[in-house]
Image 1 (cartoon, helix red, strand yellow):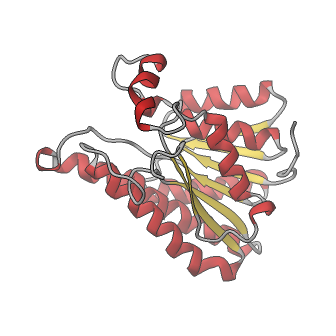
Image 2: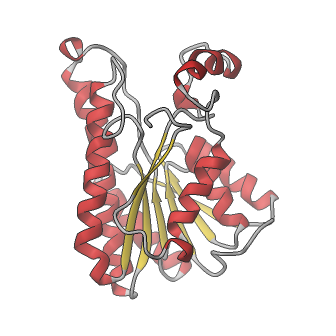
Length: 254
């Protein structure tokens, strides 16, 4: 049952074309928000908007690359111009990078993962906070991961380092800007029903069989479960949560 917690709110979701970003954008729209989805793929964003509109929600796309500062400036300005401001941001854009042992990790992959996952969140927060601060406040939720601060896995050094960076950056920004009325937290999902968790050529069923033994709950998370955590952190119900990193991983890092 929808609660309309975000009725009249303007929400920006980066990485909104697929996976967690798409699920979160749909969830915000179901609860009354006007949603702007951003990402590099225009077709994927259009697909998200279409799904939201079919459910009776309000959404629009903006093609942008969060690693390009000019794109991020344009994105936040477009949201403010199109919807009259910005109340909530879910900074979800991220990549896994090509897995491999650290000694064999090429420098370009390292830089790309850090650029998207850490610099992209930094740039997004920088301009979102400025917009929110000018209007008296807002809420930001960054997508980190249980891999990083909470858990390490072989062959994912760049990803782990980047997501640990997101967790630390979230806490630092939260302390810097709670006095401005901007409340900042992170969600750290474990393996979920998203394309990023699939190996090349792997089916969802095969993924479940591969990952279930490492998850105490015995399954991967649903996208709706991750979206529910994001919406809680962004809502007034979580008004006393500041700089929190909410792990949602079925007990994998417990």
